[in-house]
Image 1 (spheres, rainbow, N blue to C red):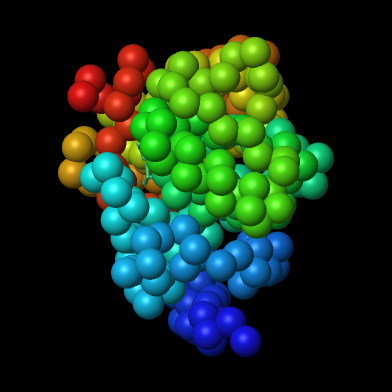
Image 2: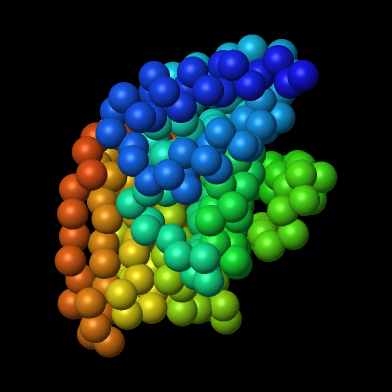
Length: 217
Ligand code: SAM
C-alpha cells in the first residue's frame, strides 16, 4: 500500500477543507495525485506538509493550499483549454489535466520542463503539452484559452494573457513586488481587452515571473 495515502488525506482535511476549499473535483484530484513523486526522493516525507518545497534551479513546488485555491478559482469545465505559466515540477499541470481536456504549460528552465514531461507521461497524463520558453508571451498560436494560471509572481498583469483569454475566460496571477504578491483573478468580459473584472484572492509569495512582460531577471 502507498505509504503516502494517509499524509495525503490529512493534507486534504487539515490544509484544504478546513481553509474553505469546497470544489469536490479539486479535492479529488489532489487526493489522487502522488505529490511526493514531484519532489526529490530526499524530500518525499515532506511532500504533504503545509509549505512549498524546493525542486532545484532555485524554484519551488507551491504550497498545497495555494495550488487548491488557484485551481478552484479557475472554475474549470471538462472541455476547457488551459494554459499554465511555470510548469516547475509538473504537479499543478497534473491537477489541471485531471479537470480539463487540454492543458498547455510553459517553463523557462529546460531541465525542469524535461523532468516534468517525463513524470507526467509516466503517470499517464497525455493531455499535457509542455514547451520551453518565456511564458510572459503566452502561447498565441494556441489561443484563446478558457483559463490561464500563472504560477510565478509578476509586477503587473501581462497584457498578453488578457489578449489570449477567451471572452468569459479566467486568469489567476500573483501580482506584487519581488517579496509579496496578491493573488488576482481577472475575468475577461468582452472582446475589448480593457473590459475585465478583477478580484483579490488574498496574499501569497511566489518566485519571480522572469521575462519580457515580467521581471527582467
Ligand atoms: N507550477 C509549478 C509546480 O506545480 O511545481 C510551480 C512553479 S514555480 C513556483 C514557478 C516556475 O515558474 C518556475 O519553475 C520558474 O522557472 C517558472 N518561470 C518563471 N518565469 C517564467 C517564464 N517567463 N516563463 C515560463 N516559466 C517561468
